[in-house]
Amino acid sequence: MRLEGHTALITGGTQGVGAAIAISLAKAGCDLILHGLHDDEHAQQSRTDCREQGVWVECVHEDLSGPSETCIASLMSKVDTALEKGGPRSVDILVNNAGTYCDRPFLEMDVARMERTFRLNVLSGYFLTQRFSRRWIDEQVRGRILFTGSINGILAEPDHTAYDASKGAVHAMVRSLCVALAPHGIRVNGMAPGLVVTPLTAPVLQPGSDALSWMKLHTPNGQVPGPEVCGPAAVFLLSDEAEHVHGQVLLVDGGMSIWQQPDMPLELSGKLP
Image 1: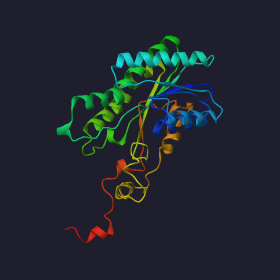
Image 2: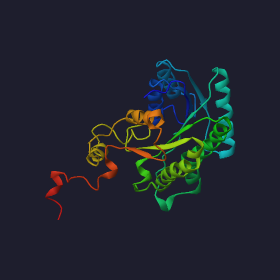
Image 3: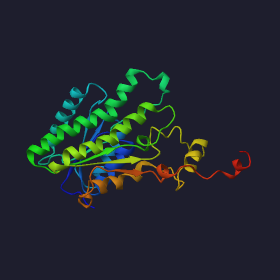
């Protein structure tokens, strides 16, 4: 599965799952614009890693947690500037990966946190997709779009109502935007990681910790991997080989989403009624 001749914009592409998607797309030959909040060490490392694959890479920076119309317009302007500097190429792949993780009990949730979660996780991807789709339809480009969802879009987690609701909305967007855009030759799909170790989850999932052991117990393949497992799935969904795959959310979760409950540990089996 190769992506030579394509250029992708990956929001939140400088660390975590976004960086893993970026390096896999680069290995497949795709040129890249990586979006991040800051030009920090994560952005620099991701840019270097991708350029080592022999592809063209630029970084742009924008805070997508503000008013959507303003943020998206600013990001589009920065993307166009990057493209002008890079020679004759245009974005024909959009990866809506930028997001945030919000954990707060429902009864303590405030409007500011809820709105920020939805602006980053839902509205940024929705309106970026709208802007690129208008351009692609005018220019008769058969664009490809990938949303990063989450296992939390189908399974609830205590004290994560805002995050769960936002990822459920992302999964619904994949389906509804597929119906809206497939007649124009634009493919929309999603990928939903299970629990992976990223900068956001690493503080909790320390090696040897009870939390890590518990999550491995609840995953059929017994693994809590790094975000690199998400990259190949993204390449497939954006490749020519997935031409007839529309409106799907591929779970990359080690089987966690289909297991009703794990086998009881032996040390608990004699303690429960």
